[in-house]
Length: 191
Image 1 (cartoon, helix red, strand yellow):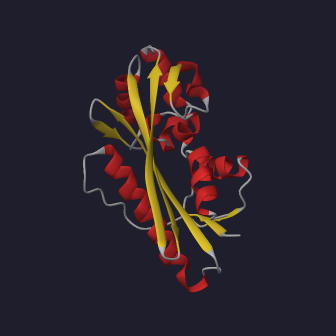
Image 2: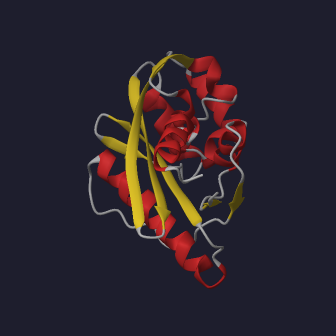
């Protein structure tokens, strides 16, 4: 049985891993995120690898035996532009104006790091949103829900009222493709 460590402070990622019955510890990884590509798949794979490596490094002296660190990062991409977390309310409004009435992609990169082995992958889900009025955008931003989320929205929260459809893994949009993670862990006998 592996000692699973989630190198993330995201409460949504914690909920998703708990939902599938994994036992794990949370140790958010610090460090600066370095982006060296404009390709969304490469960006999330690189960021998830950085987070897993930082988490391992920070725990190195007291890492438990038989460990596995999970690092993850999620971005929203529309019209070739990567949308991270909004800097402020004006930035959240700008992002939501872009996304409303359109289809965009959500990418989550995941790195599973253990002794002598690393598995990194990216998952894409397409999200189509209904048109939003300026009043709806202003109301949603006023709830503060968009402020800590890539693309300035949370599909699992109040923004659900504006989501027309998705193509792909819903949990990926929330922040972690847990079905794919579970299948990889099962295949590798890593849990």
